[in-house]
Image (cartoon, rainbow over all chains, first blue to last red; front, side, top):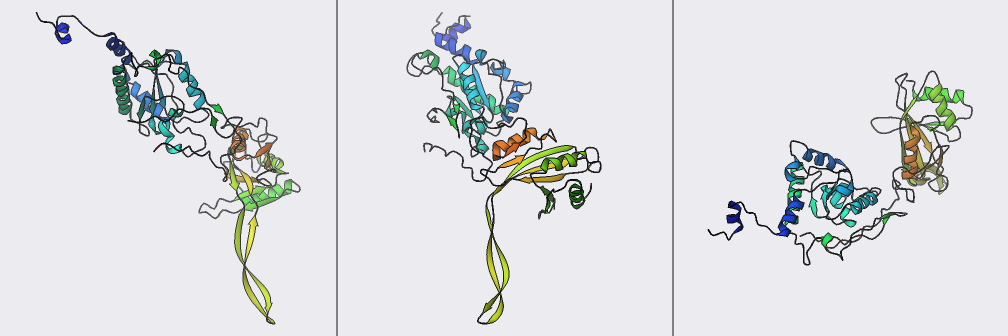
Length: 197
Length: 191
């Protein structure tokens, strides 16, 4: 009997995979989000977790009340300047590997409040964002689509080489500087703007 | 509810030296208000709350207004003697209104069902005399809203039990709701 392809082996009850494939498969199907919401987008996130949309179908229904047990931060809503240091601190407290979804116009860029005095012009100034979901607010389907996009991104990650995830790269930054309250604005180094492909 | 004039005369009869001015409102709502003087403000407020005929026991809303310096050109007719003949000449005279900050209180009466009665308090200027008497000792509901005016407009309320910033952080120095506030310039983004 010829059994050269993994599919043929699978028919015989033998599953072959790579360590990388198994590792990424496990990670992508148990993305536990951090349980926190910032504004109206959070209501859509809650709707996505309930029976009608059911984020559990994608293994991400376990919203953790502690950053220590979370893999995914869904920045769901307006980040005020007063809230930004706390968001960055929560992100720093999450263990690697960790991912960020910027949900909605406010989290991406400040949205309709961009010209205001109190709203951060995008959370990607302080923490690296993996998936941007536009909308004001995005519907639950859009959040699910963003989650699937993140799963694809995780599947494609190689564990070695230059494109490896941050937690496997000893030279990559582990903590991100928390901005401080200044006299007129937040002070602290910002990340370079991500190049959106 | 009594009319503004009736309320005004009632206050003046009860509190000696109180200066009250009716501020008209040109908008369709025509919701006029009472401008009261800062020295007697708390006395007037306590009177409005305790008087049997008025009983304004609930301050529902306190807000701030920034009035920058205004120059209004007003046409005035003056008599002038030109070439020995007295003539009426129209002249444009510039009238300057100095800048000030304002706190506006909306009062209701839960007992009598009247309202809103609108009170205004004005500061001397926008810089070193931005001080008003706090009405929190009279109506507890003013506490957070006066803090908000202190935070966003920079009005100091004398006699407030806990005057701190409420929305912005403690080290913040600006007052964002003032008309001359300039937000921090945005860094240029990559094209």
